Structure formats: C-alpha cells, structure tokens
Image 1 (tube, rainbow, N blue to C red):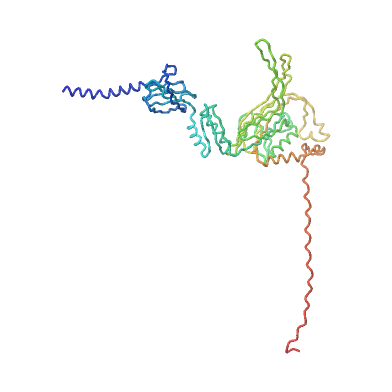
Image 2 (image 1 turned 30 degrees about the vertical axis):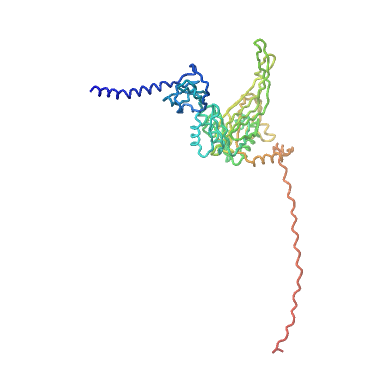
Length: 480
C-alpha cells in the first residue's frame, strides 16, 4: 500500500520536474544589452546578415544551443527567445544593429548583422494590385525604398511613387521610367488687363459669341470654381483664343507682358524668366566685431514654373506657379551706403487637369495706380474727325489685373516642324502691312510657282495607205 502511494507521487512529480527543467533551460538563454561584460573567444565566429521589415518578425533556429544573445542597439531590434535553440527578431526602428550569439562554453558562436528596413515585399504586392501588368520592382536601398522598372506612362510612375511615399515618407527614390516619353508644350500669355477700360468700353462681365466665351467671373475651369482664377472655354480650332485676345489687345483692353512657349517632359519641371537680377547687399559679421557686405543677386520680372503630368485618361495634370515682380524705387532702403530698391511682386499657384489644347486663365491679382486716360462714348468716339468732339481726358483710378493664360498641348513631331517652318519663312513686315493690316510679324513669302510642265509632243501621223484598186472581174462561163 505504501509502495503504491510512492508510485503515484513519482508519477505526479515527473511532469512537474519536466516543466521545471524546460523553464531552467529557457531561463538559461537570456538577452543581454551590449553594455554587459561578455567573455571574448579566440575562435572566429560565424557571421551573417539579415533584413527584417519594420514592425515585423523573423524566426531563427540555431544548430547548437545558445546561452545568451547580446543586442547592440535594443531600440532598433528586439530579440525574444522561445527556447535555447530558437528565437525571433522584431524590427522596431529603421536602422542597423547586430546580435552576438553565445554558446554554452561562453564563446561567441555567431554574429548576426540586422538591417531593419521598410517592407519592400509588402509594397511590391500593393503596387502589383494597383497597377496590374506594370513592371515595377521594389527593393531596399540604404534606409529607404528604390523603385525601378519601366511603366506605360509617366502618370503611372507618379502614382506609384505617391503610394510608396505613404509607406516611407521622404525615403523613396523613384527611378521608374516611361516606355514612351511624352512631351508637353505650354503656351503662356502674361497679360495686364485694365478693368476700368473694360467698363468704359461698354464690355460686360462676360463676352459671349458662337465660338468663344471669356468668363471674368472668379471661377476655375468652370463657372463654379475657387476664387482668384478665371476660366477660358469654347473655341473652334487652335487660334480662336489667340484671335480674341488680339482683338482685346488692339482695343486697349489688355497689354501683353510676355508670351513664352515652354517644352517639358511629362513629370519634369520647367521654368521661364523674362526680367533680370538686381544686387542685394547682405550684411555679415566677421569674428563678432566687424561687418562685411556681400552682394546677392535676386531675380525680378515675369517668372513661370510649371510641371505637367500626362494622365492615362489623356488629361494633363498641370502645376503652374507664375510670378510677376518689378522694382519699386519708392520703397527703397539704404544700408551702409547702398540703396536697395523695393520689389513689387504678384504671384499665384494652382494645380488643375486640362484637356489637350484647353486654356486656363489665372487672375485675381490687382494693382491700383493713377494715370491720364482718354474716355469716349463707345462706338461714336471712333468716327474720324468728329470723334474728337466726343473724347475727353480725365484722371481716373485705374485698376489693372494680372491675367496669365496657359494652354498645354501634347507635343508631336509635326508641332516642331511647323514652328521651324514659321520661323524660317517669316519676313520683315512692310509699312503698308503695319499701318493697314496691323501685321507686326510679317508673312511668309509666297510659295514659288510650280515650273510649267511641257506639253507632250504630238504623236507622229501614220502614213496614208493608198486605197485598193479594184481589178475588173474575169468573165465567167454562161455570160455574154
């Protein structure tokens, strides 16, 4: 009876002893910080390098049991042992560290270099789902992500880069290239429009006809848009807007400040400056005692920055940042004997999507000044001689508005050929052209008349064939 009780106790105690032995074996493998004193071994340790995604884990199994694992930087990677032979590493922050794995004898068996990086494989799967059929490769580059490959358009490359930025903001290198480079021509007209002259000429807020609509309401590409931007719509052909603006300029309603044409690859930035640079003195102290003056040159004039991106649906996403500035001597300053003029600057920026050939007008910037203008009754003041009776001179408060009209077009080889032909064939206008027709650009010389084609020579007449002479019939028998 007593022996049976001892047998039961031994059977009950055996699982407890096994559990305690396992706990002691697991407790023998502990993670120590790098500051703990560790015995060095003369034997070379096995080295390897691994990459762990941030906020993810990677499991390991050792060939030999380990007694201790030392983490160089515990704020970058975390080691959690599960037994004396297995453990897993969790990436905490982007960076690099290493692990020292010690064996039972106190020697360093392995040195594991750990790189904690962004999840490149997860981003690869996300881009594959977002852009099926596109050849996009994602890999880790240093502490960031590198996108490589060829895509169908620059719009796909831009959107793929935006998705990658959500995973690694500020650490994305977008080297995606489009299989077919697309170029965009940006036709720009910078105008100074007089609002008071518009009212004096009898022009209402809207100018409408069958082919053109100039909206001076404060809208963007439509009647219901944000404030500060004008919209241009309608038009039959590519020259309708130009013709309407030429008519307004001839009437004195607008004044052209600049008219540049820029070309840029889709997704790249281009800029234009028509103006100059003025010296600006900058005081600098040397050794805290004396002050030296250095000169910096700052730009002024008509400046335009834009970046077009051709979308897959054919629309052009356009980022435009125009700026017009001029020197203002009335607000000048004097610094250490140098006179620094003031600067009047008008700038705006917007991002829109336009069709190929659609025009965008940016306005809403005003300037007030006083000048001597001539007012007249609409229509009657244009009568020769008698029109002077209906004209009068007065001082008035003049408001001018800066209007920048932008027309993006998809560039084709035909566009460059036409531009080259127009510049080569342009001639100097005559006085008659400037006075009677208002032609300041001249016209192309008439095309040379085609050389006369010689008439084909008449074919030689065939020789006359003599008519056959009928011979007398021979008498036949039975006839007289």
